[in-house]
Amino acid sequence: MIEIKNLCKSFGAKQVLKNISSVFENGKTNLIIGQSGSGKTVLMNCLVGLLEPTTGEVLYDDRNFVSMSKKERTLLRREMGMIFQGAALFDSMTVMENVMFPLDMFSPGTLRDRRKRALFCLDRVNLIDAIDKYPGEISGGMQKRVAIARAIAMNPQYLFCDEPNSGLDPKTSLVIDKLIHEITQEFNTTTIINTHDMNSVMGIGEHILFIHQGRNEWEGTKEQVLTAGNEQLNSFIFASDLFRKVKNAELNNAQESK
Amino acid sequence: MIIHSYLTSLGKYVQLMGRTFSRPERFRMFFKQYVKEMAQLGVDSIGIVLLISFFIGAVICIQIKLNIQSAWMPHWTSGYVTREIMLLEFSSSIMCLILSGKVGSNIASELGTMRTTQQIDALEIMGVNSASFLILPKILGLVTMIPLLVVFSTVSGVVGAYATAYIGGIITPSDLTAGMQHDFTQWFLWMGIIKSLFFAFIIASVSSFYGYTVEGGSINVGKASTNAVVSSSMLILFSDMFLTQLLSA
Image (tube, chains in turn cyan, orange):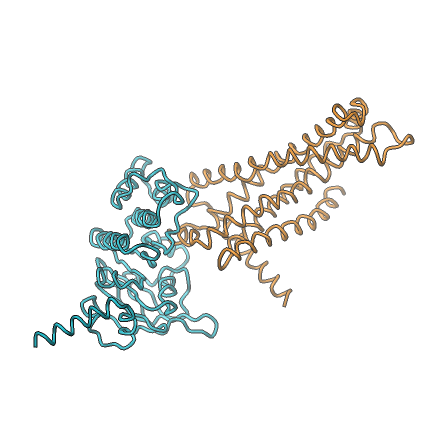
């Protein structure tokens, strides 16, 4: 479980995150949604320690990440996995070497054990045929799947995904979403996904945190999101034609049934 | 304002070096990186070093023979001057200036691209000390390989000089040999090697600093690459003056 308490982040005079508090439970896919520039990425960077919050606390199972020493942070980070927006694979390494990397760095097992684990992770994301390829030789969707395999290689307790569907077609996006959701349940990880893809929201959003202008504007589940009645959330969701039509159709159905 | 900016950069550089020179997490992985960097920064530079040194050795010999040497000077002058220039300045300082262009831009653009594509962030999230993992092997790799490049450069320059004698017929091989053997001071070779160790550190660390601290996109990677070459070249020239005086005293 990850808990954030009164998190604020400022860059000079500009306050980007304003007093955000929330709880992300384990075994659930937690989504952070919001418009571009709302502070989603800054929030995620604060959670993983790539940025220092100005004030507030980030608790990983009651361990305060913000006040930890450098060494404690390094140890905690080994319990994290992250999938970056652009996959962030090491382009000088093959797919197999990319997945092996965290195992080679930190796993106490033998080479055979490490290889076995890497093959298991690659098999899990259906990429066993691409192990000798370099990131430049595979598609964007495959790169994302390699990133997922690398992120789960060390069996992380906390999984972070920064816009995992950006640049992918809707079909591949569904595959990635499904994969992350399955992994979350299979390994009971605390998964936090940063996205503005409404298909992800409706598909896998078990807990949704909507951020608007750096504030925690709304929290709820995918079942509640279409009927939340929050003005900012509605303007975000129903900016999409598709969702406007879905809502209108639902309203029409409701009127007809009356 | 400029002084403030320079001091800030210096402070960041010192901090980065502090993180870089820490104990590697896995020596096996460190050694793998170290060997890779020796190959990429050192072995891959042998060709250009041999080529440039060969022609510079030949040109120095021709210039001295045709423009400086006269009937009033000893017959070994051309060979002697060629050897001394190669040993004292070209094979260490000028060769490192050339390498700062090749190796420096390579390091800065590699690390800069890794930064902008979040590969360095990925290392940090995994709990890896990215500065130590990426920069330390580059510094140690280049420092290890540079003495070899200095020796290769000197030998190639001498071969170039002999080419002017045997192929060009500018000077007789016996005169050239007499010059090459005249009053040889072994310390000059060591001086070149010692200087080059400092220059290798400057090239690798300064270029890594510019690459590692890139912010933004591809334009900034290009800028970092240029800054890395300019700064390391300036620092090589500046430190060459002090090192030469120090080591010649």
